[in-house]
Length: 451
Image (cartoon, rainbow, N blue to C red; front, side):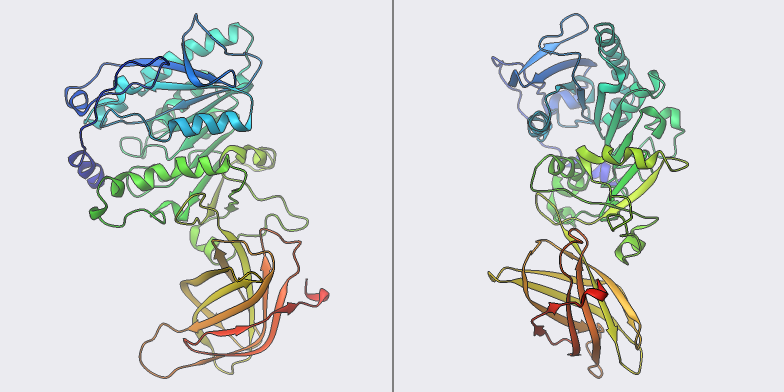
């Protein structure tokens, strides 16, 4: 709650906008947030017939809405400055680019705009009731609950859950993007988003130590970077407003990345982030195994597999890069050593392709233990996926700045891609790494018996 309090203190003024030809998201000022606003829900429809110019619709006016197609609702959260969400237009356009559907922006800015968070959260059930009334009419016109998809951000995730409860969990899908934590943490299922609120509920948790909800809320709960500090976000209050909202908003931008062709973020079902980082939970996607779940829009591809679990719930972990589109690429570095004594330390690995492009991974989250003739499998994470690796470099470090320098004698090193298991695995034999000294070599194809 401390971060939430600071957030209010740094809020700046936002100007109101003039009337426009096309309906737009409600723009309010900081003055409105201080005074408070009464709830007014506006529904704005976008389709491929009106990609950039919304139609205001209601229970009697449907505009271009086609009841035979999927209808996706986007429900925002708390708006302490009154400004429109900066990501809204991008999300609308990206959804319509991947599927011909109805996209409805649920604008409840008059209600969400207040400096008192409790006032906004108290209106969430009323927003859900408005949406229930509209969906009832759409169903009368021939729509199906199976085709109703709700994307809820922060407080919007719980609003989506309340709508789902009104239909006894028969909505097609709900996606919760960092569901709000304050005033919802520890609440019973009827007072928050819950796995039973739709036929499939997926959740991205990106700020579990501040503005987001920590515990699982869906059939599959994704925890990018463990759900805590997100790479590229400010680490101190000197980052201004971004320090307070960057982690929380990252869930939205990760979802957006899933709608772009050049970024399919793979996640790994696991009991904990530590187990994932230690490479204990990356067997999905391997031969004779189920596919790995994908983050974001295509997460429901994993729905059938989840039905086989009891209960049908799982947590999935993954890491991201600092910048859009956030994708990283996983490799295993398998090392067998022949040191007489046990060595503990970290490995830094750099890959270089034939064009001279390089990418590096520091595997230093906790020391690895190297024992004679034992294989250690380290999970390496790279920002680039280099198809043709021409050179590899390794650095071994114990982390000590004083005392003797150690050697790591490698009997065999093997590099294998998790994203592309069909690629040839690369090996190197009989290496001696001097501590804190880079060793560069050209890999060779591993014998087929080792693949």
